[in-house]
Length: 189
Image 1 (spheres, rainbow, N blue to C red):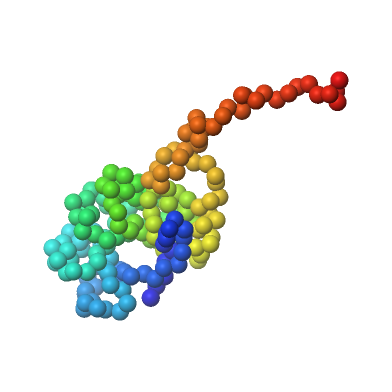
Image 2: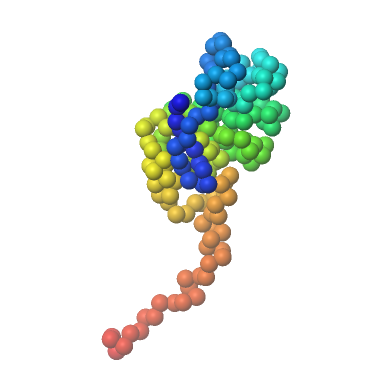
């Protein structure tokens, strides 16, 4: 069974993949197939075969390419177990926006999985946007993701992860000017 990195209690860990991605046109496996008990299908296949998949009794995931809109599955989100967002290349940021929309606007509680060109350098940003499962393309481990996630202590804006931004921390901490540096010293007389 393929493995992926998933957040468990807020920490990246190896996990078995309980889903099988079906290419368009690939026949649906019989119930009880292999060790996977869920399927991931493309948005086009989901739109064409929506009722059949939703009534199949299987855990269902939809895979969205960067040019496809989250709004196209918004009504069915409560019935989906997973949304897989594709990173076709490192510098394409549209899946970050899609993850943030899923968590913040639509309140999606299921798994948001990053697939494609997923690199450990993106870990902190992905977690902040709401991703909780990753298929790393760079051979990285959960330990690599944990280090990448904690590389920076401060964040500068609010996000889906509810980490307090630096400006809020500053507003609640004592001002460094409250204790001015002493300019006189007994050594310098």
